[in-house]
Image (cartoon, rainbow, N blue to C red; front, side):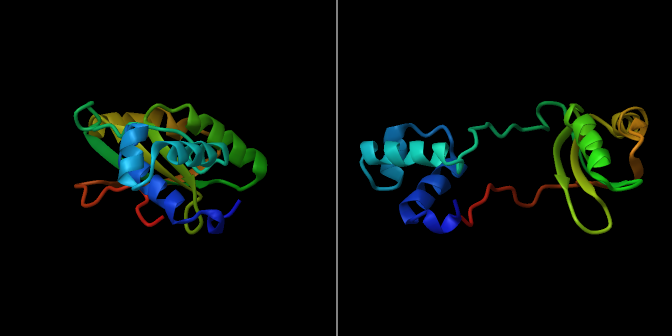
Length: 155
């Protein structure tokens, strides 16, 4: 299914939920100026058709001890389906990695990593990420401050 099949009401539902996934059905219906029954039917269709994958809580990592956010760019030694699958499998099991994207450009993967300190990040690189045989090179960018954080509001 393509986005063209979504009408403005569907988009309003998605916008409202991306802002607050804890809305009750009544609150969601009120937010989109509709009654609960048709809102419920649309919501279930959006879930069934995969527009809504899951409902999550956005955690404050600073309060949870992850005081250092790092974007780690990874270049593989070689690129093949087997090497990529192996890398993705290992990275998926690393607790420090919050997000992993296969990207184009100078690097093959972009990882969002949380660590408690620079020392912890160094240990993560040396003892965890650095032990993956397919990794060719790494580059790290450290987040100094968050300017804007929103879910996709341009739906």
